[in-house]
Length: 314
Image (cartoon, rainbow, N blue to C red; front, side):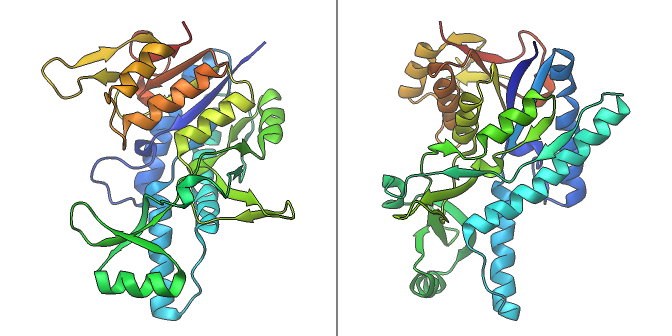
C-alpha cells in the first residue's frame, strides 16, 4: 500500500533571492523544485502539493490598484485574488510536473484544485489584523483608501510607508478535503490549498461567503495533511535543517527531535515569527494530531537521510 505525503512548497519554490518574479524565473524554479519530488515517487509515496502565494497575490493587488487608478476597473476582493493566484501558480506546478513525469516515463495524472478553507468569522484575528498585503502608501493616501474601502492600514516598521493589513485567522476545515483524498488515493498528484486556501466563512444562513483575510500556508497545509490522514508532512524552505541559536556562534542543527522538544524550543523563542516559527508550529500541529512525522528541509534534500530535520511524536 502506498504512503501519502503532503508537500508544502516554500516561497523559494517559485521565487528566489533578488529575482523580480518573471514567469520565466518562476517556471525555472518550479521545475527545479518539482524535480526533487521524483524522490518521493520512487519511495512509493502518493503526493499532495500545497504552496504559498505571498509575492504573487501581492502583485495581483498592485494590478488591482493600477487598473482602478488608470481605467477604473473595479478592485477584486482578497478572496478572489487568492483564487486567482491558486489558478496561476497551480498551472505552473501542474505543467512542470506533467513534463517531468513524461520525461521520466512515469504514468500519473496531475490536477489542480481551487480550494476553499473554512475560517471562523468570530476569530479574534479579525479584531486585530496584522498581515500586511499590497502596496506601500503615503499616510494621506492610506487615510483616503481606509475611508473609501473600510480598510485598515499600519505604518511599516521600516518606515517604507503605510500598508493595508488583513486578518490571518486559523483554518478550521479544508472544504475540498474529500475530493483531495479521493483523487490522491487513485494515484493522482493533487495541487491544493494554494496560498493557505481561499478564506470563507458560513453566514447566519449557513451559506459560504468569502472574506478579506490571508490564511497561513503552513497551518492550512498541516490541517489538510491531518484531514486526509497523510503519513508524512514535508515543509520545504530555503535551508536543509532547522536550527537553534540561529546565526549565533553556538548555532546547532536539529536532526530528529520529538514534538515536546520542538514545542519547548518554539516557546523559548528559538524560531523567528516571520520565517521558521510558523513552519515548526505547523509541524507540531500535524504530529500532535496523529501524524507520523514532519520533515522540514529544502527541496534538494528530500529523500536524503540525515540531510533534514524530522519532528516525530516520541
